[in-house]
Image (tube, rainbow, N blue to C red; front, side, top):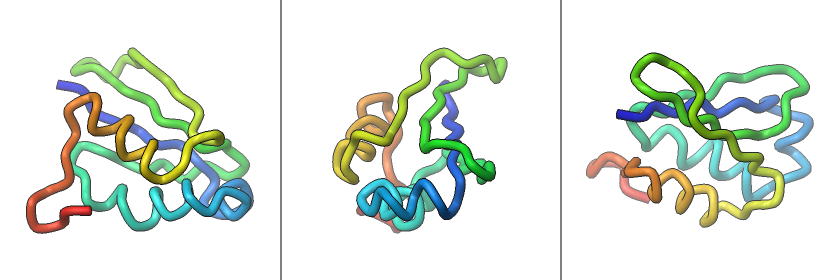
Length: 86
C-alpha cells in the first residue's frame, strides 16, 4: 500500500498558487495516509512511498490546478473518507 508525503512551504510558494493552496489546506485533510510536511522554502511536491517508506514516484504540483492535484491522488487509489468527501 502506498502512502503519500506532500512537501511544501506553508506560505510563500503556496500563496502564489491559489489552486494548489486550496488543495493543501482544504482537500488534503480529507485523505487517509496522506501527510503534509511543511518545509520552509520547499516547492509543492507529492511523493508516493512504498511500504518500506521508499520513494517510488515524485511530482511537482506547481503547474497543476486543484482538480488535477486531487485526480493525481485518486489515480493512485487514494480516496477521501466518506464523511469528508470533496
